[in-house]
Length: 256
Image 1 (cartoon, rainbow, N blue to C red):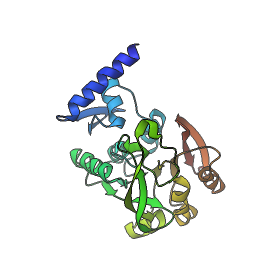
Image 2: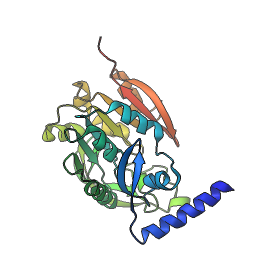
Image 3: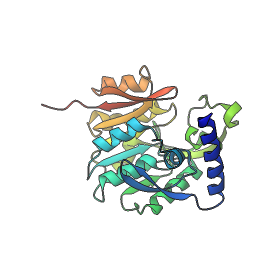
Image 4: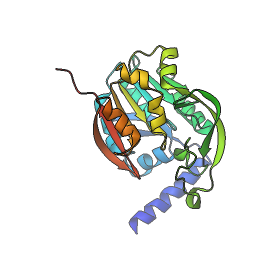
């Protein structure tokens, strides 16, 4: 009963803020971020003090150091990108990929609002195993977090409405990294709603060359993405369940 009352009050407050100024300060592991608290990622933090994907958040805070390089694939409105940019500092770099146009605009707004244009580079495209124009991205207005390049992904139309498509640009990580002259990545997060195997296929040269030290991938333990990373020598650790999949950390073993 108390939970339903709290959610009802929170939803009403979200609706009121959406009509006015929705930007508020939220605290994540002692780091203050300015964000749209009507966004599903930030609303739980602001209204209920409920951490978003707490184990992944903790892992990021523990692993990413000043001067670090973080790549956020499926950045959404920028929760992990903003957090990473705060941890990496002015000498660090964050590269965020978000292909869904309205969500990419929200990401750009959050970057500007937090004065992090100097350390976050946002790209309105998706990472894939090929570089193409006008690739269909399946989106639903009811939940921005469910945009996917997988045509038969289990987006629940009974709750979220039927998905529509928008044409987006894709590139491979290997092509992007070469063009951007990024020599190393300390940590990479991949959350692409079932498309992670294709993202990793576009990273084969970088992974083989040891350019990426660690990844956190939203996937399942028996997925092709998991098997690919394990075959390359990454050691997996399940951080937390996120619905039908898990956030799994993959790290290269330390050299003696």
